[in-house]
Amino acid sequence: MIEVEVKGVAIANKGGDGFVVILKEKGGERHMMLIIGESEAAAIAIKLSGVAVPRPITQDLFASVLRAYGIRLTRVDITCDDGGMFHGTLALEREGEVMEIDGRPSDGIALALRHDAPIMVSDDVMTKLAIKIQEDEDSPEEISRRPEDMDVEQLRALLAQHVENEAYEEASRIQKIIIAKTKGVEDSAKSEENV
Image (cartoon, rainbow, N blue to C red):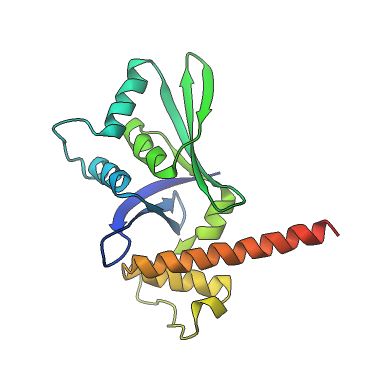
């Protein structure tokens, strides 16, 4: 598992009808994004900005309930199953007893921020979704081929460009192509193992 930090929340496309949370590996250069819902984006953004809300939102309420019952959120693990569904497993501890609760990564991230709990991403997810956002002017050359015809490394470079340019709708489309291509490689490796 790789520990990540939340770098921010952004609108996923120009129409404003989707959001992404941007995560960066601690001590590394790789970033990744997850598509999230509006309420989860707001919950994460509120906590990151330090804005005080007059009444608790759902994630604040849930965090308060956990504390009231002496339950501590010790970490959130973000994983992906074989079907491409992301999971945000909450590791909870009370009086030495540890339990895990399955949830959405976005809710887990919002709660982790409220409990100062580490957010961990599986190596597999980071490998599939990782992009490097270059801080200098030496960005990769524009690639004129169709994304569907590119290899995974070229797609990651293109994804990084779209994130840098805040073109999150196109970045989301590229991310889906990367997932499909890496799943195809894994499936073919599995079928070779079965031969």
